[in-house]
Length: 192
Ligand SMILES: [Zn+2]
Image (cartoon, rainbow, N blue to C red; front, top):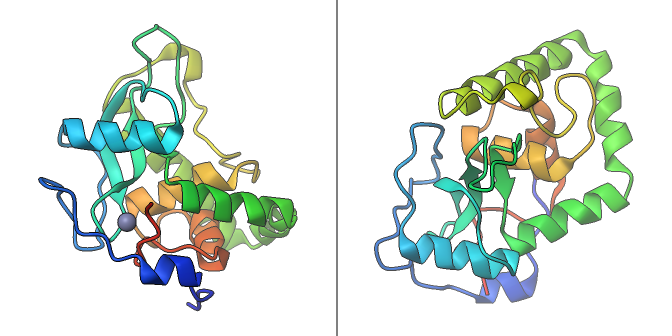
Protein backbone atom coordinates (compact mmCIF):
# COMPACT_ATOMS: atom_id res chain seq x y z
CA UNK A 1 0.00 0.00 0.00
CA UNK A 2 1.11 3.53 -0.66
CA UNK A 3 2.49 5.71 2.05
CA UNK A 4 3.03 9.41 1.85
CA UNK A 5 6.68 10.38 1.44
CA UNK A 6 8.38 10.94 4.77
CA UNK A 7 9.12 14.54 5.69
CA UNK A 8 12.56 15.71 4.62
CA UNK A 9 13.50 16.22 8.26
CA UNK A 10 12.78 12.55 8.87
CA UNK A 11 14.67 11.34 5.82
CA UNK A 12 17.87 13.11 6.72
CA UNK A 13 18.01 11.59 10.19
CA UNK A 14 19.83 8.29 10.22
CA UNK A 15 20.43 7.56 13.87
CA UNK A 16 22.42 4.54 14.81
CA UNK A 17 20.62 1.89 16.84
CA UNK A 18 20.70 2.23 20.60
CA UNK A 19 23.25 -0.02 22.26
CA UNK A 20 21.52 -3.23 23.21
CA UNK A 21 18.38 -2.48 21.21
CA UNK A 22 16.76 -5.51 19.65
CA UNK A 23 15.42 -4.73 16.21
CA UNK A 24 12.84 -7.26 15.18
CA UNK A 25 13.58 -6.97 11.48
CA UNK A 26 10.40 -5.05 10.89
CA UNK A 27 8.57 -7.81 12.72
CA UNK A 28 6.94 -6.96 15.89
CA UNK A 29 6.04 -8.45 19.17
CA UNK A 30 3.05 -9.61 21.14
CA UNK A 31 3.33 -11.30 24.57
CA UNK A 32 5.37 -12.65 26.14
CA UNK A 33 7.65 -9.63 26.00
CA UNK A 34 11.30 -9.40 26.85
CA UNK A 35 11.81 -7.12 29.82
CA UNK A 36 12.49 -3.57 28.64
CA UNK A 37 16.05 -2.33 29.06
CA UNK A 38 16.93 0.74 31.10
CA UNK A 39 17.83 2.45 27.81
CA UNK A 40 14.37 1.65 26.40
CA UNK A 41 12.66 3.02 29.50
CA UNK A 42 14.73 6.20 29.29
CA UNK A 43 13.77 6.71 25.64
CA UNK A 44 10.09 6.12 26.40
CA UNK A 45 10.16 8.63 29.25
CA UNK A 46 11.74 11.18 26.93
CA UNK A 47 9.12 10.47 24.26
CA UNK A 48 6.27 10.88 26.76
CA UNK A 49 7.82 13.79 28.63
CA UNK A 50 7.03 12.04 31.91
CA UNK A 51 8.13 8.89 33.71
CA UNK A 52 7.02 5.69 31.97
CA UNK A 53 4.59 3.73 34.12
CA UNK A 54 4.06 -0.02 34.20
CA UNK A 55 6.04 -0.82 31.05
CA UNK A 56 6.27 -4.59 30.63
CA UNK A 57 7.86 -4.63 27.18
CA UNK A 58 8.52 -2.85 23.92
CA UNK A 59 5.87 -4.01 21.46
CA UNK A 60 7.14 -2.21 18.35
CA UNK A 61 10.22 -0.29 17.37
CA UNK A 62 11.41 2.24 14.84
CA UNK A 63 13.76 0.95 12.19
CA UNK A 64 16.55 2.50 14.31
CA UNK A 65 15.60 0.36 17.30
CA UNK A 66 13.98 3.00 19.47
CA UNK A 67 10.57 2.13 20.93
CA UNK A 68 7.43 3.18 19.07
CA UNK A 69 4.87 1.18 21.07
CA UNK A 70 5.13 0.15 24.69
CA UNK A 71 3.25 -2.68 26.31
CA UNK A 72 1.83 -1.49 29.62
CA UNK A 73 0.68 -3.62 32.53
CA UNK A 74 -3.11 -4.00 32.75
CA UNK A 75 -2.84 -2.76 36.31
CA UNK A 76 -0.40 0.09 36.94
CA UNK A 77 1.89 0.07 39.97
CA UNK A 78 -0.54 2.58 41.53
CA UNK A 79 -3.30 -0.05 41.31
CA UNK A 80 -5.16 1.79 38.56
CA UNK A 81 -6.55 -0.44 35.79
CA UNK A 82 -4.99 0.35 32.41
CA UNK A 83 -6.79 -1.12 29.40
CA UNK A 84 -4.43 0.22 26.72
CA UNK A 85 -1.94 -2.64 26.50
CA UNK A 86 -0.40 -1.20 23.34
CA UNK A 87 0.43 2.47 23.77
CA UNK A 88 1.95 4.59 21.03
CA UNK A 89 4.84 6.62 22.42
CA UNK A 90 6.71 7.86 19.36
CA UNK A 91 6.21 11.64 19.02
CA UNK A 92 6.26 11.71 15.21
CA UNK A 93 3.84 8.79 15.04
CA UNK A 94 1.44 10.26 17.58
CA UNK A 95 1.52 13.59 15.73
CA UNK A 96 0.81 11.91 12.40
CA UNK A 97 -2.20 10.06 13.82
CA UNK A 98 -3.45 13.22 15.53
CA UNK A 99 -3.38 14.91 12.13
CA UNK A 100 -5.53 12.10 10.70
CA UNK A 101 -7.99 12.44 13.58
CA UNK A 102 -8.14 16.20 13.04
CA UNK A 103 -8.82 15.49 9.38
CA UNK A 104 -11.95 13.51 10.32
CA UNK A 105 -10.55 10.18 9.19
CA UNK A 106 -12.19 8.33 12.10
CA UNK A 107 -15.79 8.52 10.82
CA UNK A 108 -14.54 7.49 7.40
CA UNK A 109 -12.77 4.42 8.78
CA UNK A 110 -15.71 3.58 11.02
CA UNK A 111 -17.93 3.59 7.94
CA UNK A 112 -15.77 0.83 6.44
CA UNK A 113 -17.09 -1.44 9.22
CA UNK A 114 -20.27 -1.70 7.17
CA UNK A 115 -18.27 -4.27 5.18
CA UNK A 116 -18.94 -7.59 6.95
CA UNK A 117 -15.40 -8.83 6.27
CA UNK A 118 -13.78 -5.75 7.80
CA UNK A 119 -16.21 -5.83 10.72
CA UNK A 120 -15.37 -9.48 11.42
CA UNK A 121 -11.64 -8.80 11.22
CA UNK A 122 -12.01 -5.85 13.57
CA UNK A 123 -13.91 -7.96 16.08
CA UNK A 124 -11.18 -10.60 15.82
CA UNK A 125 -8.61 -7.85 16.48
CA UNK A 126 -10.55 -6.88 19.62
CA UNK A 127 -10.48 -10.48 20.81
CA UNK A 128 -6.75 -10.81 20.03
CA UNK A 129 -6.11 -7.62 21.99
CA UNK A 130 -7.93 -8.99 25.02
CA UNK A 131 -6.09 -12.32 24.76
CA UNK A 132 -2.74 -10.55 24.65
CA UNK A 133 -3.62 -8.39 27.63
CA UNK A 134 -5.07 -11.21 29.70
CA UNK A 135 -1.93 -13.26 29.09
CA UNK A 136 -0.22 -10.64 31.25
CA UNK A 137 -2.94 -10.10 33.84
CA UNK A 138 -6.71 -10.35 34.09
CA UNK A 139 -8.13 -7.16 35.59
CA UNK A 140 -11.83 -7.42 36.37
CA UNK A 141 -12.57 -3.70 36.04
CA UNK A 142 -11.61 -3.65 32.35
CA UNK A 143 -12.77 -7.14 31.34
CA UNK A 144 -14.14 -7.07 27.81
CA UNK A 145 -12.89 -3.55 27.08
CA UNK A 146 -9.99 -3.32 24.65
CA UNK A 147 -8.97 0.01 23.14
CA UNK A 148 -9.58 2.52 20.42
CA UNK A 149 -13.31 1.83 20.13
CA UNK A 150 -13.01 -1.86 19.28
CA UNK A 151 -14.95 -3.96 18.46
CA UNK A 152 -17.57 -1.77 16.73
CA UNK A 153 -16.45 1.86 16.90
CA UNK A 154 -13.38 3.88 15.85
CA UNK A 155 -12.51 6.24 18.69
CA UNK A 156 -8.72 6.52 18.86
CA UNK A 157 -6.39 6.01 15.93
CA UNK A 158 -3.34 6.08 18.23
CA UNK A 159 -4.53 2.99 20.08
CA UNK A 160 -5.54 1.16 16.89
CA UNK A 161 -2.29 1.99 15.11
CA UNK A 162 -0.33 0.90 18.18
CA UNK A 163 -2.07 -2.47 18.06
CA UNK A 164 -1.39 -2.78 14.34
CA UNK A 165 2.29 -1.95 14.85
CA UNK A 166 2.60 -4.50 17.65
CA UNK A 167 0.67 -7.33 16.03
CA UNK A 168 1.90 -6.76 12.48
CA UNK A 169 -0.10 -6.22 9.30
CA UNK A 170 -3.32 -8.16 8.84
CA UNK A 171 -4.48 -8.26 12.46
CA UNK A 172 -6.18 -4.89 13.00
CA UNK A 173 -7.76 -3.66 9.75
CA UNK A 174 -8.57 -0.17 11.01
CA UNK A 175 -5.11 0.26 12.56
CA UNK A 176 -3.56 -0.91 9.30
CA UNK A 177 -5.69 1.56 7.34
CA UNK A 178 -4.73 4.41 9.66
CA UNK A 179 -1.02 3.61 9.31
CA UNK A 180 -1.36 3.41 5.53
CA UNK A 181 -2.70 6.94 5.51
CA UNK A 182 -0.31 8.40 8.07
CA UNK A 183 2.68 10.45 6.94
CA UNK A 184 4.87 8.46 9.32
CA UNK A 185 6.29 4.96 9.02
CA UNK A 186 8.31 2.79 11.38
CA UNK A 187 10.47 1.99 8.36
CA UNK A 188 11.82 5.58 8.18
CA UNK A 189 13.53 6.90 11.30
CA UNK A 190 12.04 10.17 12.48
CA UNK A 191 13.49 9.97 15.99
CA UNK A 192 15.01 13.09 17.53
ZN1 LIG B 1 14.20 5.94 14.88
